[in-house]
Amino acid sequence: MLGLTLGTTDNYMTEIEKVLTEDGSHTLFNSGVGEHYHSIHGAIQESMHVFIRAGFSLASDRFDNLSVLEVGFGTGLNALLTLEASTQLKIRTFYTAYEPFPLSLDIASGLNYTETDLLIGHSSDFVTMHKAADGELMKINPWFSFRKYLCKLQSGLSPESAFNLVYFDAFSPEVEPELWTPDIFQMIRENMTTGGVLVTYSARGEVRRILQSSGFRVERLPGPPGKREMLRATAI
Ligand SMILES: C[S@@+](CC[C@H](N)C(=O)[O-])C[C@H]1O[C@@H](n2cnc3c(N)ncnc32)[C@H](O)[C@@H]1O
Image (tube, rainbow, N blue to C red):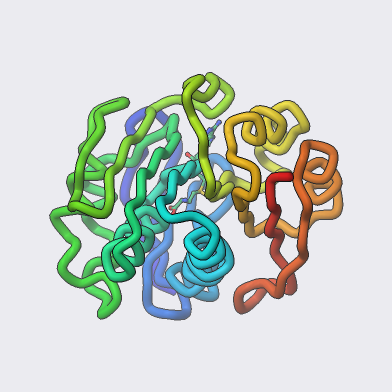
């Protein structure tokens, strides 16, 4: 693993270190939180498995257009993979991300995602998404529109939201228990369409039970390499 100390996020007084994961893509280690942003077994591999294959693919079978909520924009990898999938498959996608601790452009532009075969050609889109001002709607291409709110999810969702795909990609329940609560999942459910899909890398029994009591039917799916299981929930 390559470790390189890069600095801090804009608002987080903590060290951010760039790490090369086993599939050759970068992730970051946040020393204040003590966690990586992705699996060290492969950042792109994990995001493709949990968010694109288990989430985006099912939601795009169920709905003509997608309205995606991401909890924790972070490096922007999930957004970038979703931009690529929606463009290739011609699925109109409106993406809304929440991120209270945005990375500096220096850190973001040092990540190697747009040098990979899968994401090559998206480097200016990647910068555009990182530079987007709070709440600014950006039409990245005819298939993919993007908006990022620079605040905590706990600040609330706008009343007209009707998400049909949710990427719940916060830091773990151990370090951010305030995000994995019945109140948070009920708020998300109230802002989703019935049949909408929520995916998360966590497979904790407590998370599964909270989802079930918040209006979701929950499945345990095989996890990405290095992780036995993940959760996928359908809004009922
Ligand atoms: C596991 S990392 C995210 C990975 C990200 N999806 C990516 O592809 O890089 C968790 C992210 O959640 C953000 N976060 C922390 N507290 C949050 C909150 N209260 N609401 C929304 N996001 C939060 C962190 O700053 C971090 O960027």
